[in-house]
Length: 364
Image (cartoon, rainbow, N blue to C red; front, side, top):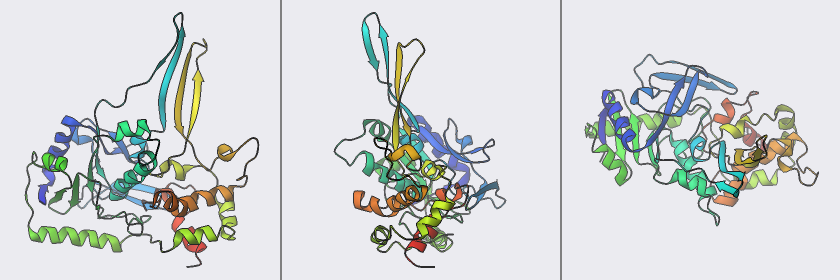
C-alpha cells in the first residue's frame, strides 16, 4: 500500500532504521563540497536541501531554494564503498614463541541500511551481486556485508545533466531490489514498501494512505524526469557493435584524450577489480594481507611475465568501455553500466562514455 510521509516526519523513518541497522546515507561534506555516502548516527546528518550541477569534468553544489530536500543526484560515492570496500583487511598474522597464528577480522556487527540512494545505485547492487554471489566461488566478504541489507531508495525526479539511467533501464523509478521506495513531492514523500521488511518499518512511521491524485502526481514527476535526462544512449545491439569495432579510429582519439587517472573506475558503482597486498612490520613478526581496489587503466594491471598486451592507453580505455557496455552482457547478462553519470562528472578531461559509444556505432 502506498502511503504519504510528510517531510517533517522523514527523521522518524531514519530513526527507526537506526535502531536495527548501520545506516549509510547521503551527507554533505564541507571539505569536499559534495554529497558523500557515509555512516550516520542521527537523522540530522542526512543531506537535505541541496541541489547539484554536474557536467563533464565539473561538479558544483548549492543550497536549494525551493523547499526540495533531495534535488541532488549522485556524488562520487556509491554502495560499492561499503559492500566491496576500497581497502579490506582479509587477515593478520603474527609470529610468537608458540608459532604462527592467523586472525580474520570480524564482519559488520549490524546489517547495513542504505537510505536515500538512487535507483541506479540500487541496480548497481544487483549487478555486483552477479559478480560476487552468482558465481561458483562466492565472495564471503561481500556476502557478509550484503546479508540482511535494507535498501530505501528515493526515485529520481531531479536528474543531473550527465545522467542516462533511463537508457540503461536503471531509473528514474526503481523497479526491484528495494525494501522501501520513496518519491519526493511538494508536500511529502510517496512511500511504497517492496518487501515485508519495508512494510514493517513503514508501519512504525506516522503516515497516511496516499490518494489517487498523489499517486498520479508521483508518476508525472518520474515521467518528467525521463524526458529531462541530460544524456541518452542507444543500447540496441550495442555489445555486438562494440566488439566488431575494436579497430575503430575513435579509439586512437580516446588514447590521446584519456590521462589514465583511474577516476572513472573508482567512482563507478559496479567496477570490482582488485589487487592483494601483503604488509609486514619492521620487527618481521606481524603481517597483514589486504584487498584493495585496482583499475584496468593502470599500466601494470595486465602485465604478465614482463609482457603487457595493453601497453598503450587507448587499449586500456577501449577495454574498460567495451567491458561496461559489451563484455559484461556476455558474462552476466546485464550491462555493467547503470547510467549514473559519475564517470563523466569525475573525469578530469570530461570524457563522456555515451558520446564515445555513439561515435563508435556511427551515429551523431
